[in-house]
Image 1: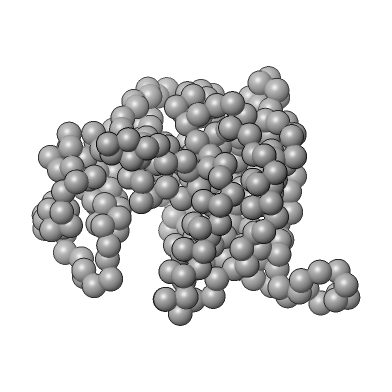
Image 2 (image 1 turned 135 degrees about the horizontal axis):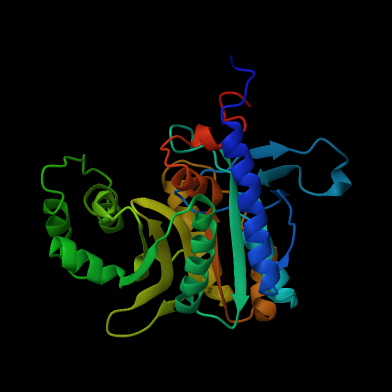
Length: 322
């Protein structure tokens, strides 16, 4: 019966306990909870993330009519950091178009937080501490393993993700066949991650992968050197990706270049690009603090806690019943 919840009462109650645990964790550490807009005049330019847009029907003096539902609270949180607020987090709903299925729902819950004066390595430790507290709610224990992105590929697949040719990367997929048209180097690396590496991650291990190829920097700093790397990390619980964090980029000019590159990629695909967030760029230019930030998928964490592969099992009402 479609009027009934898709999640069990057990799952609904566990979500409430999880939210309380996360809020208690940050309260004890002096990290401030904030709320930021769900609708904005600018959107996420990332070519691999689709945003919902909507039209404001009120008076034209109120501002731009086209608005975007946030795919994360990142941009307004960074504006608060630039204004001098300090360590903060937000626990709330975010939206991504086109992502509906067994593991995805277009509306889901994200926890995102920022620590001033920290780098990505220090934030990995805090993220692991939080996840251990959350998993303890269901009696699970886990160990943390830290590993450089490059070392994982070399250890498990015997290839160098930074230097080996695309042909070597393709061959490392072995019997997994993929249509190669339009795929670049990072696409092949992602396929190796999802098809060859992730499925073998130990179930009760938290794996923190750090220092990604510079081409996968997103909103992270790039650390110069003989082999430049993006100062970002991802945390996996078993094969499930839970969190994505950065030593945050503070250079407004570089951020603008990345936004415009994203827009060019979208244009080449014939896709609409959301408006670039000029207010974020202004905040970065005004003096953005050295900090690290991370976004954690709460629904995915609940799926792991309840040992289910269906996101509907942790949502009061999934997309089909909303």
